[in-house]
Length: 216
Image 1 (cartoon, rainbow, N blue to C red):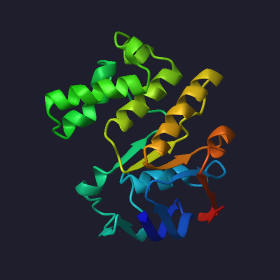
Image 2: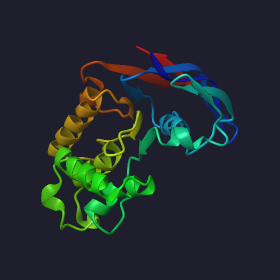
Image 3: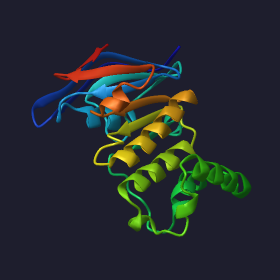
Image 4: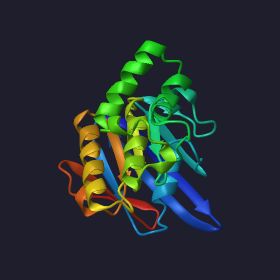
């Protein structure tokens, strides 16, 4: 069953056609890796799917419900979570970073605390509760960003280069978390060049070439 389908999706930048995707369908619960040369438009595509940027044209349908790109609907924004390659973290605390999205959605206090505790355990961050976010390592910051996404239980997760610039141990821990997203049935699109991510079990490859998607 298709969770998200887009058709005739186009985007140009500085007189250059960046995206010209005839059709892209993401099945409910599948994990995809988005590959392509630097500057091929991978990040642009993720930002469009997340409603951060808008395409020049195209149609979209999510879980059988058509939607417009402008304005990107609030009901869909609650189903999609985007994690930037260099995620912004609030300076307050690890807990505040994870709880932010839940608080913004009006999740009651007791439920919010329970889900934050689960996310801390899931991402193995409990030993860092007293560490200011700015002092976390690159791998710890990435795990915190993933925990902040995981706690929202998105139907569609969009990740931009989640293992870039991480040391070997941090990469391993991050990839383990990515695997659990797939096991939980979350539909995920991961833009990366990391061979260990590309070769994860049941990972579907989407290659962005000259603005078009080529599937394996």
